[in-house]
Image (cartoon, rainbow, N blue to C red):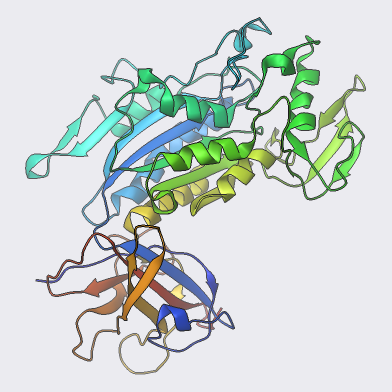
Length: 451
């Protein structure tokens, strides 16, 4: 009996030369898809959606709910079917509560107190504060909801638009994952995926004083920009004009450092580079430009727009996403979120074990069958996170075991252009849990030329 191993994707540059060790691959020519998969991939994943519930998010929330099924369809193409999921929804509204414990006061009803306090949302059709859908005996599923999974998600994702306009995306994730109200959502051995849906940047408070001294919502919102980011020259962000190379402002007295939330999320898993996935459907981080409104107030100009909607540069949120091994950022400025949600689902699938190549794999020879230009190796992940290469895996056909194959797989790769999947044949031998497969395969463009 044959055991298959599936692989994740990436892109780098690679010189063409078949069956090299990973250490012999040099970035010279040809586009490749890179692979990193544990020998015994888990099918458990806890997925937290952090949804902006401020006043401008109605259309985006509707598109999220309408296209959630496409997101789950990607995960259902995993070998063995849909993973065992916990799915929770929290909002960006923390009111005026800040990381140092300060809070209180009233700045409009939406920003009163601690807002939604990171509590996962409930619905009448769901038993508990998050969706549970797990495989049980004889292939059945254990569920805590009635109706379809899409309907259950739609019920908890209908968060409305009455939340605080000072959106604490990162702070809300930290609160959602630490709030005792949400006990049981996180599982020790499951992967963790966090998905942001937002049209403004993060404004996670270090101290509630950001609100003090003004009752003008526009002015307070601009303080998030002025105190949350800095750009080349570190100039006064109140001055009108474009900015370049913007990034989170360190040591802001008003906003917490982005790294605080990066460190927190990574602390939840022993191997965060492989077990934490972050995704954002957010405003484009560039361009960043300051302008004046019709009342001569300094405001941040939107970075993208669509169908009368617009979004603002997600500088802090994008920086947060970039600090994780499995990350994806898609623009929220699209007519619908279907394509973005498919890409988010694909990234989670990568972390769980993805057999599918996005691009066509290069064929070196005109002989029958695909003669791939790949490097495939078994790698041991050591306790300190470093890697030890154990041996090269050749392409099948020469009698060696283990060996790899690349074949059409319409079932698992239906959403890709290539429809190709890579498997490793081991004749029933299952490697230890600390073994990963690392692979790189040269791919081609649609006309067959090496990319």
